[in-house]
Image (cartoon, rainbow, N blue to C red):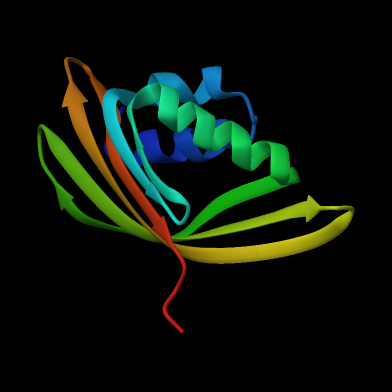
Length: 122
């Protein structure tokens, strides 16, 4: 699997809204930076995902304009626009932001070692 394939699989697995589907794609020592804080390690990342899924009903999440800014045998990184659509308190909302993901090769598999999602500057 290429880093590009890994990111497409990650995007698809997020929309299943079950962390056990997403977890195998993330390194055990990963650090995720989201608007609400820093989440280090699988337990903290799981909590962040599950908290978001609890707030955003029927969420659909996708990536656009993915640009691979570095690729190598052991590491790769991409930047992108992320978008989402979900129900909050019975009303439909949409949002977007910018993201960076860094992948690391672990034996034969790529794993996400870092993800940074944030709002666009105003």
